[in-house]
Image 1 (spheres, rainbow, N blue to C red):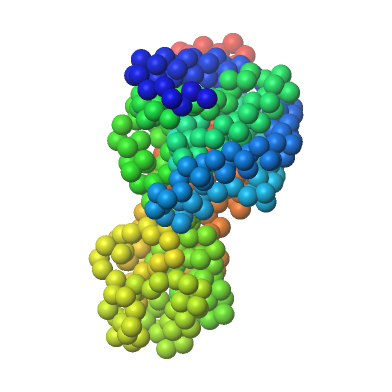
Image 2 (image 1 turned 60 degrees about the vertical axis):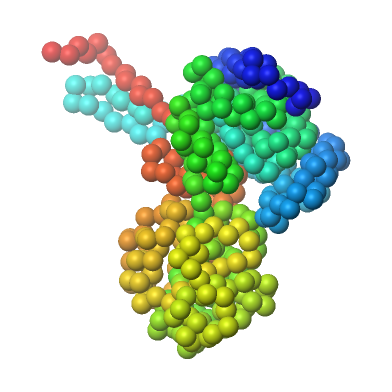
Length: 427
C-alpha cells in the first residue's frame, strides 16, 4: 500500500501514471464486446464472494481506525460492511452484468429528403473519476457500472475506507484479468494524500472526462468549485414528504416512518414532513407519534406547536438542513399550493414525495415541482438506481445537463452521429 507517500511530486507522478493508464484502457474498452464485459462482471461478483472474509477483515481495520473519532452514526453506517452487505454487493454486480449493453445502441434514426440516413448511437464517455467518502460499496458499484458502459474509471475512496476499497478493488481487477480485459480499466487511487483529489479535479492532463463525487456537502462543493472537467453531482438530499388531506392514514404513517427511519444516513432519507392544514385533526398526531415511537426527534413549526406543544421548535435553518440522522422537521402547509411553495423554496432538487388519493393533487405535485425524482404514495428511500432497475447507481445527479436522477449505465454514455450516404454532395 502506498498510503505513506506525501511529497507533492510523488503524488503527481502516481496520479499522472494512473491517468495515462486509464486513458489507454478507455480506448481499448470502447471496442470490447458486450460478452467480454459481461464475463468480467460475473467474474468480479464471484471474486467478491470468494474473498468475502478478506473484504470484511479490511473493513474491520477501517472501522477500528475511526473508533473514538466522534463520527455521526450515519457515517459509520455507510462505512460498515456486513456479510449480507458483501453478498448484496456481489448481487448488484451480477445484476449490472445482466443489463443490456448500452454501447452501440441506436437511440434514434431518421432519413433526410436527400437520401442521407442518420443515426444517433450511444458511445462510452471515456474515463470517469469517482471521488467518494466512507462508502466502500461504491467501489464495486461504480467499477461495474463504468465497465458495463465501456468506460475506464479511477476510484478515489475516502481515507477512512481505504482498506475496504482496496480489498474490493483486487476482486474487480481479478475479474478484468479473467476476461482478458485491461487491468487498468478500474483503478483504485492507492494513496491517502488529499493532493490526489486535486490532481483528479484538474483532469489529469486531459485523461478524465467526467468527475462524480459522492459524499458530504464539503466534498461535493469542493469538486463543483475546483473541477476543470464536467461534474455529475448533488450537494444535498433535502427530501420532502407532503401528506395531503386526501391521504390514507395507515399508508401515510407507514411511508413517512420508512422514508425517515429505514436508513437515516442515505441521501434519499426524508428530512422535512409537510402536513396539509386540512388534515391536522386526523393525520398529524398519529404520524408524529409513529415517528417518535421509532426514535425520531421532531422539530416542529410554530403552527404544529400550537396544536401539539412539547416538540423542539424548528428554526429557519432546519428547513435547509440535511440531517442524515433520526431528526425530521415538520410544518403545516395550506394544501398542495403551500406544499409546492415550501418545497420550491427549500428543496435541493433531489427527491420529493406526495401521499394523496386526490389525482388533481398528484398532478399538480408532479407538474409544479422540478426535483430529479418525484414519488406518489411511496417512500423517498426508493431514490436509488438499484430500485429503479438500473442494477445500481454511481450517484444521484440533481443537475439538468446530461444526467439527472440515478446515474446508471445509460447515463454513463454519450452519443455520436452516424450518417450513411450514397454519394451525396452539398450544393
